[in-house]
Amino acid sequence: MQPLADKYRPDNIDDIVGQTHLIGIGKPLRRIVEAGREVNMIFYGPPGVGKTTIANVIASKTNKRLYKLNATNASIKDIKAIVDDMDSLYTMNGILLYLDEIQNFNKKQQQSLLEYIENGKITLIASTTENPYHYVYKAILSRSMVFEFKSLDKNDIQRLVRIIFEKLTDSSEFRNITYDEAVVGFIADMSGGDARRAINIIELACLCGKNEDGDVNLDINKLVDYVNKKYLDYDKNGNSHYDILSGFQKSIRASNPDAAVYYLAKLVKAEDLLSICRRLQVIACEDIGLAYPVAISIVKACVDSARELGFPEARIPLAQATILLATAPKSNSAYMALDKAMTDLDIKDNIKDIVYYEYGNNKLEQMAKEYMRKMKV
Image 1 (cartoon, rainbow, N blue to C red):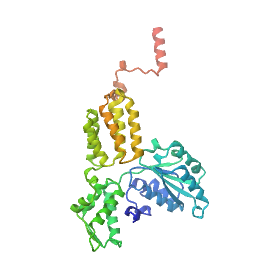
Image 2 (cartoon, one colour; image 1 turned 30 degrees about the vertical axis):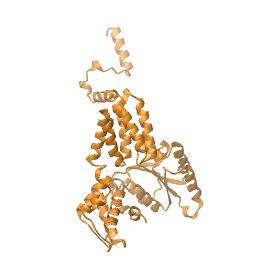
Image 3 (tube, rainbow, N blue to C red; image 1 turned 135 degrees about the vertical axis):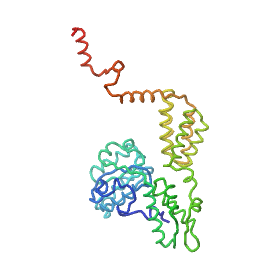
Image 4 (cartoon, rainbow, N blue to C red; image 1 turned 45 degrees about the vertical axis):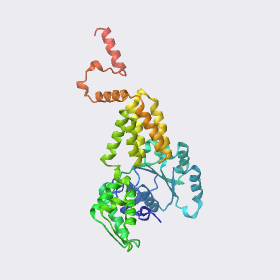
């Protein structure tokens, strides 16, 4: 059975919810789509915000054959197979390759794309949840336009929820769906700005709440029972998200491995891998620092392992990194020294105490002063 998120995926740019900074009237990405321009692009942002949907719309506008690959399991061989297919009748207008999670391609794999991008055989749209300036090969970046996608706000999700309920009511699967605005707001809150997650919640709720006649009557109490517990315990974009991350870091800073592992378990339960990995690397630099500098490389290895493994196995290297940091000696000397220097830079020149500032790169001025002193000018 086709998932609702795919079944009701918009095929027109006007039907896409959110991303008005990119696809609003007169905005850059919309202009490219409407003009049917063949441009290599990199989309980056959180999951479920419309990256794949817009790639589909671009493919239809340019009349190109769309191929989709996921970099987590694709290889150079897969790319060559797509290029070899160019001579077929279906690819006369060229190929649009949508490469999801491009950050999982190593440098050699990304370099293999360059030849086909430069000779025009492939128009590339790559997507990533990471910062492309850190993970995408510079030669590809220089040949691409980069667009940042943002999490959908609550109003966007609420609008989407109403659209999906309306389409489900018109379908043959459900005869009638009744709900109130509290249900719409609840789904929007639980989605965390992720359209795909919101649609999955709707699908689960409707399937569980469907009676023998095909009618669905949803209220808050029923919805709470239907929705997976992890959505309720942990709101990725809400205050609890930052409270848990803060508790996680403070437990490590206080050298309390038990408390640190407890907060880690909460984060793992929510499957928030990216936030955990980022926070561990921050802690290694900010709180451990020069007291045990090798911790930075060890944590980086654990983080890379976790990202490669994915959940549930990722929890093991994450726990190792957490306990290592919690039991390691602490020093924030480098962090504090840089912050103090940056604060001093904010002091206006006319109120600085010149005695404490020597500009070693101003050699000409120093030589002139020394000459004047010797000549007693």
